[in-house]
Length: 54
Image (cartoon, rainbow, N blue to C red; front, side, top):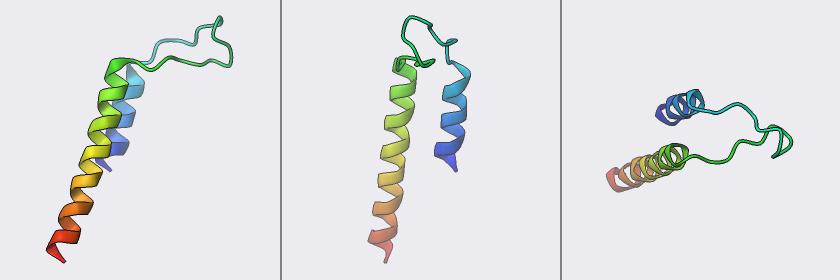
């Protein structure tokens, strides 16, 4: 859920597709990489805490 919201926030900063790149490909911006990393770490910590509590 949190990751889904973070992905939505990350899409707000997308630049329009660059025709030189083809296929409407948008290069990864640092903010997207940080959001993805934060999402992965959060998911890992949640799963770790669930396993630890059981």
